[in-house]
Length: 154
Image 1 (cartoon, rainbow, N blue to C red):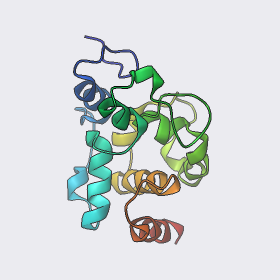
Image 2: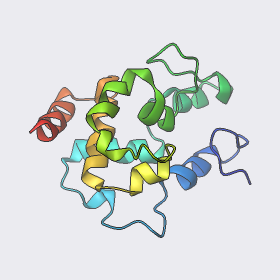
Image 3: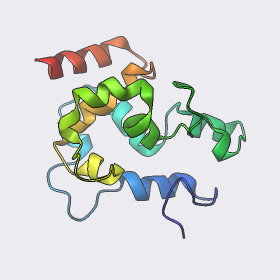
Image 4: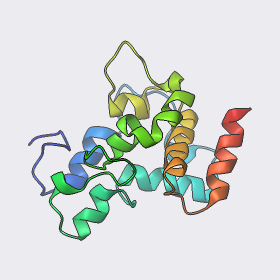
């Protein structure tokens, strides 16, 4: 079975995405995301992104029966599939967020979702995810984003 969510067959794609990008690897240190001191809406937003229960084109297109390769990001005009990895690591719309959270990215190593999600400070990763979701308007409440932004800005 192909474990790359961008090239695997459609059957079981959500499982493949979770296994490849969000499943906790054996080498991960520290606590789980659900143990973080986040408000309920913040935790729900982080967990929804990790579990594929969100409004990114890769998910909304699945319900609309759009071929995966045609589920393009709606936050930029690059024509790339709008999946979790694209939002967090590549989309020009979230570039400014990646710059603010540059400490999460090891410039010597090519970007890897599992390393991003599990390699560093879990709270910082959660705040990064929330900031990306807020930057593109996918968070249901402005307070979630602004609270996260204020905590990080200090």
